[in-house]
Length: 509
Image (cartoon, rainbow, N blue to C red; front, side):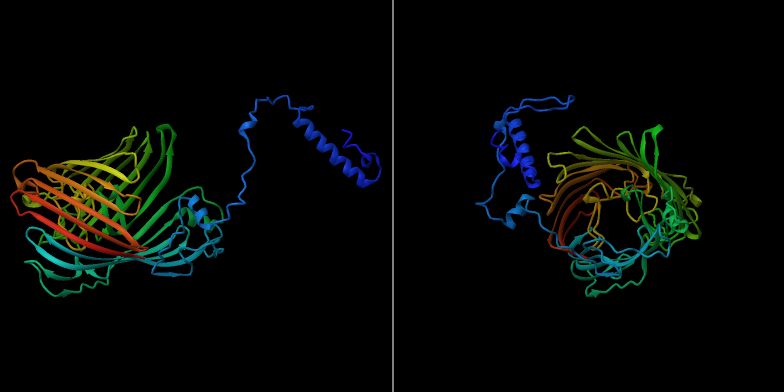
């Protein structure tokens, strides 16, 4: 103590007082460190401390700074090269820093920051496909172009065009096969595939009254695309609209989130139940569609339900039918993810005893195992049983397109597939999808179907048993560039076998 209370502490000068204060503080610290008197809040409790567990801070004098080593700390992650849209006006899609303040033509509570984007992908594939009745080797191309005008944070006008294919025919060059037409076919199409407005009445109302609305009410109208039940029940673009009661809850029913979407279409409706005089599908028909689709998060699962009606006029006046659907998705333990879906079609009454095209039911079971690599290694086993002629409410393909890759075509070269209707058949697809280190994907699959009943004319597309073996591999080769290859073989009873192999390169922008 005497060392600290020397002459400066006994002096009266102001600088000496500061020195004295510093000395006293230092003495208190040392006293506490070496067992001197300490004061503690009565609510605190002292615990034993093992000083050997503590050490000095590390020093890096012998380790000069390295930017490469710093990157390794974060798993070697680096900035991702951004693939920019083909066109971006008014405001770029990707930029650093804060956005500029929007304008207020629709009110201060719903500001507008105009943005126009043109984006999509360009697909080109070379394939040799043998569909039994048609054998063609070809080089085909397809351009998918989205045009998006964002008006506010919730309102936009969107269009989609495919200028290089028309009526299911793609711009192509057929170079081999017994059924090739030869030469180059340029299929140009100036039609607009979708053109719709999408917004939220709640946000628009907020702008008008300059107060925050207490509700959300999403709407869409125009030539609008709709997808319900992952595209199994509805995947179509038709002229009409929809309105949604969004983000509702019910504590009494243990529902944490639910939506109800009411929709209607009055033109461009497509369904396999209405085929033209040549047996083909098109949306230039006299069909209307009305329905409601909903989902519920409840009881540790995800419920989906829907009801819809298709009404025909003129040539399709007797096509009318109704459709109901329901699904439940959940995880069981730490090993299984499962979805069970049901689609029922009923109420069709055709004229003069004509064969019905929409009647029956189908049950779909979708299963995937949860492995030690749940995001990358996914074994799956999907099954179905279909009775009579169930149909999607609005779509241009069958109900089995999500059952496995053996039941889906490529939308470009006419890649062969097994019967995807589910009409009077049962079967399944077993396979595995492996995405490696998220930089490539391999899918291998075996699929099979068996007919129910013996009378093909009574409503079954498959003329016998079918077995399919399929494989797919895809990976990015550069920012915006993806390559993909597919191969399949189908062994069909009572008809010619099918097979196909294709290589595709896709440019995304």
